[in-house]
Length: 237
Image 1: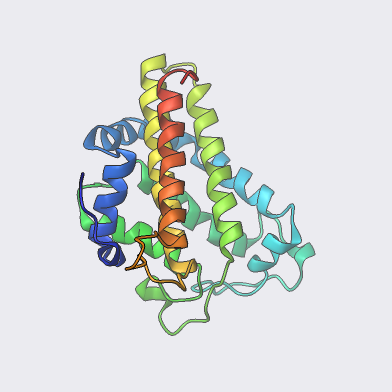
Image 2: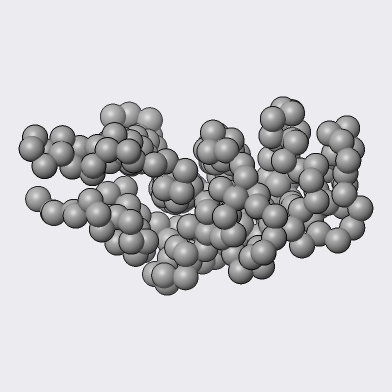
């Protein structure tokens, strides 16, 4: 049995090593993502538009795009009714999501800087400047519920695109779908770690009871791993 010091999970490289080991994200998964780049790349504009159409379906998610966005110097919308896929500020925001999608299938996952990027994506949505260009800029705060369900929505779009692609054989679809599932569950944790606070001790020294936060992280990884196994067995346990 491998020992994991709970306190060590506050360190990003240690946390990533644990997450990768638990969910089984290996170099083979990274290779599958890289191999999927020619498939995912052309789909990115459609994926991005679909995501923003969904975000504009609810006022609680759409309102985040009314204030002037950091780095945008053009005319900003002043009300929800101004928002559209073609608004210059929305095009500006869409570029960030497009870049993110492309990075998922091109990054070197053996480099610490790749995981730092994914971690900063989570951090920047809390209102803290995750990236250097956001320092001394107004904070961007998006509540975790919206970040989490959006990741699920993005995953559904990507998995459907791979599963229904006419030029991919079943084995290729399976390894790519499993790799996408794993990396987005890890990304979900890299959002959650900046939102979820643990008010209890990590481990009760007297009875050895795991904290609620530790249970939450473990539970999420178990679910992600089980989904990956289910996908890999063609939907059969």
